[in-house]
Structure formats: C-alpha cells, structure tokens
Amino acid sequence: MSHELRTPLNAIIGFAQILTSDKLPSSPQEKKVFSNHILQSGRHLLTLINEILDLAKVEAGMMSLSLEPVPLAEVLQECQVMLEPQAAKGAVALRFGPAGNQHVLADRTRLKQILINLLSNAVKYNREGGTVEVSCAQAEKGRIRISVADNGAGLDSRQMAAIFQPFNRLGQETTGAEGTGIGLVLSKRLVEAMQGAIGFASTQGVGSTFWIELGRCAPAEARGAEPGYAILPAPSGAAGAAGHGPKKLLYVEDNAANLQVVRELLLRRRDELELLVAGDGQRALELARRHQPQLIMLGLNLPGLDGAATRRLLHEGPRTAHIPVIAITASARPGDVLPGLVAGFFRYISKPLDLHAFGEAIDSALRVGASCNE
Ligand SMILES: Nc1ncnc2c1ncn2[C@@H]1O[C@H](COP(=O)(O)OP(=O)(O)O)[C@@H](O)[C@H]1O
Ligand SMILES: [Mg+2]
Image 1: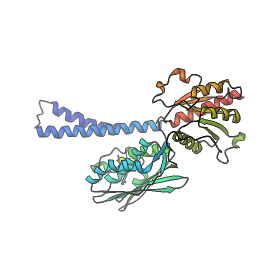
Image 2: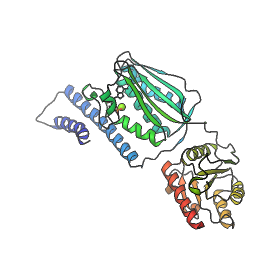
Image 3: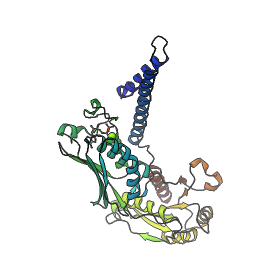
Image 4: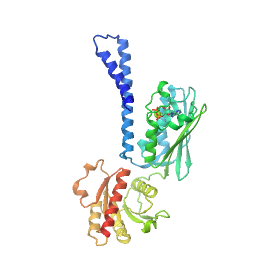
C-alpha cells in the first residue's frame, strides 16, 4: 500500500517544489499544467485514503451500516445521473432496465457506493461506442440481483482469479484509466456486511457482467401507520435448537418503517428469536405480562404512554420487573440523549439502527437476562 500512497504524494511534492523554486522558473502555461498535476494527484490520494479507511473499517467489523428498505428505482436513478457525464465522455451508452417498486434491505449510502463503483468500472473499462446495461431480477433466497453488464474487453482467467485483490488493477495501471484497485474488494466487503453477495462473469472480447444480490423487502410504510401487534413465529427448526425454546423479544415501536427494519434483521439473522410487536406502551405492558419475553426493546417517543413511563410500569410490575429493557432513541448521536431519560434502561441504542450495536445489545441483554433467571 505504501507504494500507492507514495506515488501521488511524490507527484504533489515534486510539482509543488518546482512551482515554489526560484531556480526552476516556469511559464504561466507550465504553472497551470503543474498545478493540475497536483490537483489530480491530490484527488486521487483522497479517494485512495477514503477507500483504504473504509476497507480497514469493514475488515475490523467497525463499519456502521444502517439497514433499511431502499427503493431500487430511486437509487439507480441517482447513480445514472452521477454516471452520465463519465459515460458521455467515453462515448458509452448507459441503459437502465425497469426496477419497478422493488426494495432491498441495505444501507442506502453504501449501496450507492457499490453501484457507482460497478458502473464506473463498466464505463471506464469499456470501449468507445460500447454499452452498459443495468438490470434487476429476482434471485434465490428471496433476494434481488442487480446486474451491470458491459461490452468491454472482458477478463482472462488470471485476471478473474485476482479481481478482488486490493490494489491489483490487472494491468490497467498503464492504460491511463484512473483507479485505485480497491473498489471491488471494498464493494465485496460492504455487500457481504449487508448480508448480500457479489459475483461476475466475463468473456474475453465480449464483455463482463458484475452483479450484487441483496435481500428483497417490502417498502417502508409511512410514519404513523399503526402496526398494532403481532406475533411472528420463529422460523422452523429454530425452536428446539440445543434444547432451548425460542427467545421472545418484545419490540415496542409505532413507526412502521423502523419495525420493518427490525423484523428483517431479526428474521434473517436470528433464528432463535421470536418477535412480538406492540405499537404503544399500553400494549407493551399487556404483552409483557402475558408472554414474559426475555428482552424488551422500547422506542422512547411513543404515542400515549411514553417510553420512560412504560419502562417504569414494567419495572414496578412483579411479573415484568426482571426483564431487561433496551431503549431505542431517535437522537442523532448517543451523547445527545438526556441521562435522566435513559436511566433504568439496560442499554440504549440510537436510530438509525447500527447492525453491530443492535446485535451486540440483544446478545448482552439476553445473557444478563438468562443469568438472572438461573
Ligand atoms: N467491468 C470491468 N471490465 C473489465 N475489467 C474490470 C471491470 N471491472 C473491474 N475491472 C478490473 O478490475 C480491477 C479492479 O477493479 P476496482 O477494484 O474497481 O479498482 P479500480 O477500478 O479502481 O482499478 C480494475 O483495475 C480492472 O482492471
Ligand atoms: Mg473501480
């Protein structure tokens, strides 16, 4: 990596030295050219550093992803607008197939980052007059596959084997096409962190198709829609695992979109959990008494009986006092939460929900709950 960082830095320092030196006079014309080199290297370095930091973050499991139902048509439209100028410059035609009203479970910003990398690759490694076609289709396991097909030069088997290696540009470093060689490996890590997959097929002389797959989900409903309550069964096979019954988690939330995210996260990843849902504090109390969940997750801004009052009543009830309660706050930053507001909660996590924080909070609350019951 040091080579990749040093090369643009050397250019920046070298040209800056020429520009500031009295012994190396340069014409106004040359000054402009040298400044442009500095600018270009600076931009390249910035992209490189951002990508390296992103990659380090995902690899350390520290990348904070906020998964939500993302409307595909909207995201693809935004990508198209961003890529059009680059495509026009390379005389490459961009074609987007219909995405309908399909939604995928993803972090919106990161999904865009991935798609832009695939699209910009398809444009910059294409030929003049080539095309890039984007299409969406249903895939296995309730997923949606987004494909980006180009008719560039394609890849040989040696290149295919090395395509996800960081910094490996497979020979493109000599062609003048800008790049860092990190885009694909970063895309792979990101899509996997969103519980999706990435792959490609390529034929030399014909072109390449890169695709990603992400979980399909229903669109988020408008805020204020009353989800009422429902008991979602644990997926089959989970209940009897290791001799324990499913663990019940009561989620109290009046926002249908947030409820949907939690439902997707839990049902896809946590087979051992059974989700109970209450739309307000009063229902939460009823369900908690009746079903004795192992854990309660409570939104603080509930209609009627608010989160803090609900927690107090849970705590005072002999049948519910022992259940750990995690607060879910809408504050932008955890530090914004008033200490008094979250006092008495086992933990609080803020929206948008971070996948790692969410899973970790559930695990530790379940551990604590289990040891209290022993
Ligand atoms: N659609 C494509 N067609 C041909 N080669 C590609 C395509 N996408 C990626 N590649 C090759 O894979 C390498 C790695 O891609 P990537 O990680 O996005 O890095 P970058 O685009 O910054 O070089 C590219 O340098 C290029 O050689
Ligand atoms: Mg790239």
